[in-house]
View 1 (spheres, helix red, strand yellow):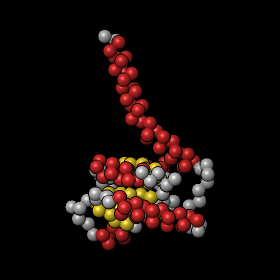
View 2 (spheres, rainbow, N blue to C red):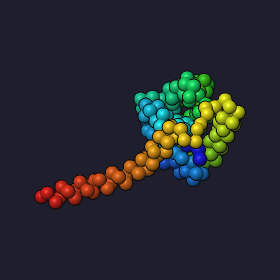
View 3 (cartoon, one colour):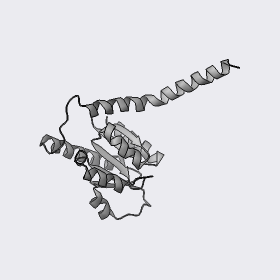
View 4 (tube, rainbow, N blue to C red):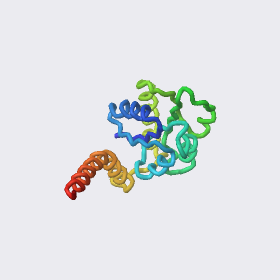
Length: 173
C-alpha cells in the first residue's frame, strides 16, 4: 500500500485530498505546517509528498529543496498544490523539485492520475535499484506503522481521557 505525506494548511483541501486518496486505498498522513512535514518524513517514510506551495514555517519550495538535497529522500516524488490565487513561478517550482503542479480545489481524476503516474515511476526506480532498499522489517517502516496507528487512534483516546477527567472531577465535588 502506498503512503502519502499531505502537507496543506487548508482544512478543506486536506479533507478533499484525503477523501480522494483514501478511496483508492492509499494511506494518507496529513500535516498543516511545513516544519512538521519535515519532522514527519523520518517516521512516515512516504512514497510521495503532496504539499501546498505556501505553508506556515516552511513552504512547499523549502520541502521540495530539502527532499532533493537528501540522498534518503531524493527519490520521493513531489506534487505542488496551489490555490487559484497563489502567485508563483511554475518554473521555479519545478526547479525546486516539484514533479507536478496541481491547482486546488483538486479534481479527483487529475489528482489520482498524477499520484498514480508518480508512484509507478517511483516503484520502477526502486525496482531498477536506483531507489532506497527497503527491508520487510526495517525500523522506519515499523515506526511509520506505529505512527499511523497512533494518528488514527488519537481522537478516540483524547475523547475517552476527557470523559474520564470530567467524571473524576465531578465525583470530587
